[in-house]
Image (cartoon, rainbow, N blue to C red):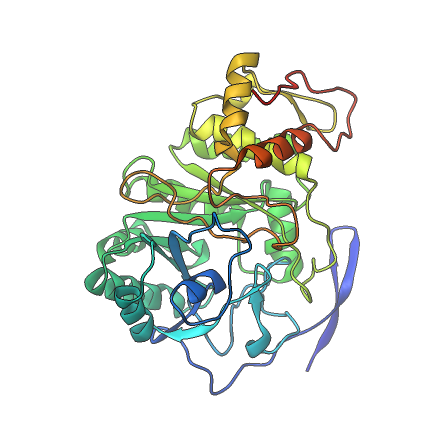
Length: 382
């Protein structure tokens, strides 16, 4: 088995051993990986959420193959060269058991739950596009869940491919761009890690999706903590906003045995300011032109007056999980603990934050300064 020394940018990365194909393992389209939260909710795994307020509202699944993903994104648990056997594979640092689609549909229809939406995720595998359509069709036919398609853009070759996803039954799509700048995208997902993904193509697919789907039903994923500044991440959000595309924000969460397995999570200050900026753009229609940044690219002013600023932060809403909605417009894809451990401060709240949570958010919001300026709107809990 070949072992090589990986050099990404200026940082020398550890030796990586390519994972062998996992023979005799169930594969898509008959089987899918299911998030641990979904498996717990449907009685497939034992466990309890760390807080009583948590109720899963969305079911997340991924395609699965013996050769896993053909991409090699530096932070991803299903990357091609991650040195763990399939049975020990995690994704966003939690277990994703493999379940037959037939059993998953049956449990969705018979188990008591409050899930309203299914997210069907592709892998960078040539078979994944067609298989994801098959899974979407089966859930559309046999359940009452709304369905989103999480697209691996490298598999999309034409606008017609996006139309096929819609025709299969997905009323929304998301494109996981993840990295906020072209340089970081290339470093973590492109040629330096021998990956197939290309920045321009991902944004082309995003724009093409807006020509197939209704305004507001196309989203992108961005991951904070891959080396971007707050200004760079919010510029990517603004780029999407200008296209009529919403941003769903994640915090980097290091996956053991990946290229970034020892890379730290972004500071809570960095992440909270990014969350607030994304919310102000997506929900309140503000522009990055209204924000002010210091020399380190950190937000020091969001362009809101004190009363408006306090009201928005005290609502707790900007710090909830941003995901595809249910039929009422409330977030359905709330992904409990998709960004951190239960023992760590909650980064994306899968429920409306409590008063104590908001107090904690205030203490985090203006922390972790690196530049030569300070926050303008310090705010307070009313």
